[in-house]
Image (cartoon, rainbow, N blue to C red; front, side):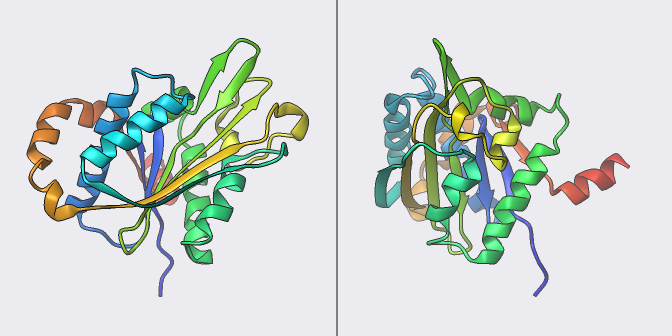
Length: 226
């Protein structure tokens, strides 16, 4: 079976990955509903629990049904997003799928510095307050069987981070706190979502173009740029 890549999107600055084969309608339903939930939540600070609770509530109103959820506080340690994501995701993903996650992060890191998608991600991935910088990415992974795994690690650093934080560890001395990991597992009740699909598309309007970015695999990007 040939190796496939994750279908990667930046949704209002957050990372969404589709693994396996999905219809375009299903992907758009996931992307549009999560984009709307992001926009509804943005009146709150991205690093706050209020942002996260508003986001999750908005998704619930858009027929994302929660199957499980949990929180974990880890000790202070060297930090990267993939390091904190892997233990949770390994309960749901195969080694091959975890490799797709790693490859997707590599593709994102290779985006041009002036890429709208990269700028949106860097603007959303962290929040500065006083002498601390809070790193608070949101990662959403949709598996081949349509299970949605959402993960948000939150930790403080002594200085702002760059895109290397995806898979290159910050040293422990640069990290001010142990990460708090919030994860929850959901699925989209598709038969119910149909009733609001057109209304959501209408409400989003041009933001579907300006706040939603598709990231082609690096090999394809490099070929197009050659």
